[in-house]
Image (cartoon, rainbow, N blue to C red; front, side, top):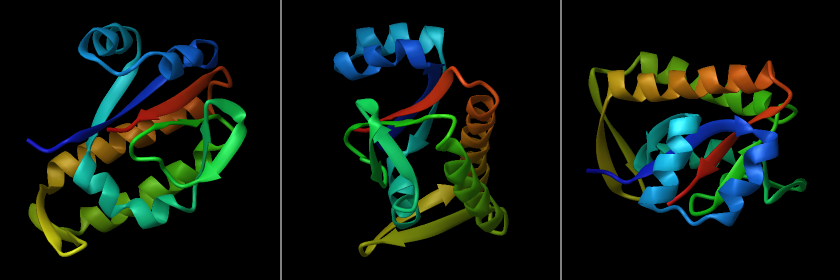
Length: 146
C-alpha cells in the first residue's frame, strides 16, 4: 500500500489542535470523527509538486505564508487562499480525465501506476472541500503530511 497524505476541513478556531498534537492513531481517530477528510496518494501528490509551488500555504498561523506544500508538515489553506489551490486541482482533473483507466506517472525515474477512477475521486473530493472553505469564512483546509 502506498503512503498517504491527509486533508481535512476544520473550523479555524480548532486549528491549533492540528498543530499541537502529533499524528498518531488515537489523535487521528478523534480528528476524523469530527471533520470532513480525505486521503491522497503520496506519489500522486508528489507528481503534482511542481505546480503546488504556485500556491501559497500557511503554517502554524495565518501570518506565516510560504509557496508550495510541505509534504512532511502541516499546511493550512484559509478562505482567502483556497481558490488558487482549487483552480490548480481542477486543471489536473481535466488532464486526468483524458487518461486511460490505468496509467503510469514518472517522477525522478520512478514509475507508479494509478487507477483513473481513484485519482479523479480523490481530486474531486479536494475540490469539494475547497468549495466548502470558499463558502465558509470560519473553515479552513488542513493538510498533514507524512
